[in-house]
Length: 333
Image 1 (cartoon, rainbow, N blue to C red):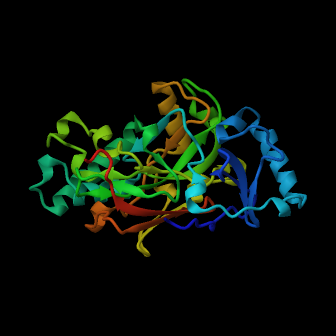
Image 2: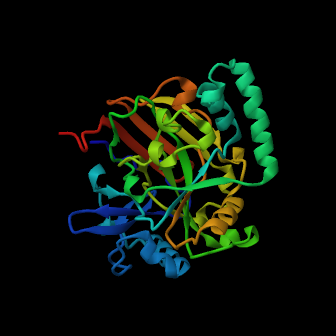
Image 3: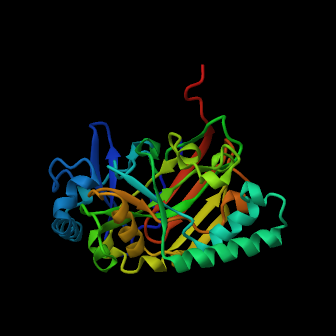
């Protein structure tokens, strides 16, 4: 069982965690000084989504409660298996190919089938031109993720026997605070309640399962497995993250740094992603929008996940995930 790693917390404010201490899911405030169940001040709230209708008022109340020192007797130390994904999201939306350096590196290291015989230099020229074209077109790519893939921030990632190229993709995830459809980018920030961490595990050898990239990537085939989306450990209210583009995404594999890139390398920023996604689907309060992963994935390093590995992922001030990797036995007899 992975240890819960309660570091890299907000320097100001707090985050919401979702715990099960034996009596069912409940919320806790996680601050630099400890972890405090909110049952005393938030009635019948088992998930962050329950708080969204009165989000600002609830955050104000928790702030005052923490500042007032009324928390010492309430502090807890949950085991890793008692820390749940902070959201049971109604919908998950995932931005693809949204970090310039990441996509170029991937297309060199893990080329489309039609570029398998091209040299690395030729692949890089093609990928760079394609990213220039994408940025100029102003059209993000966003697909629907699987709620059944959600996993806690300290839960084991289970690698199924159908892949030899399971890969990590640590991402900044946006928690949407209200419903929305056809949201203009000018008002997109009004729909952001907070931020958390997601690791979008991907089976690289199943992105194009037929070997024909002209049909497009098969996101369900390569990303939809159980446990493939560790989320959390906390949701930090947006008021404590004034500039998400200034955050840094870091993933270590068995202690070795693999990803360490700034969020500002995004091709399409958060307002543009919300604008685009809300033009394609009805957004719901509590939805999670993954914003893409930066450079440094396993395909770039030539090293994929194996049972026995441990991933440690963090984003500035949003906490730390620690997820062991095991072989899945689901469905096997």
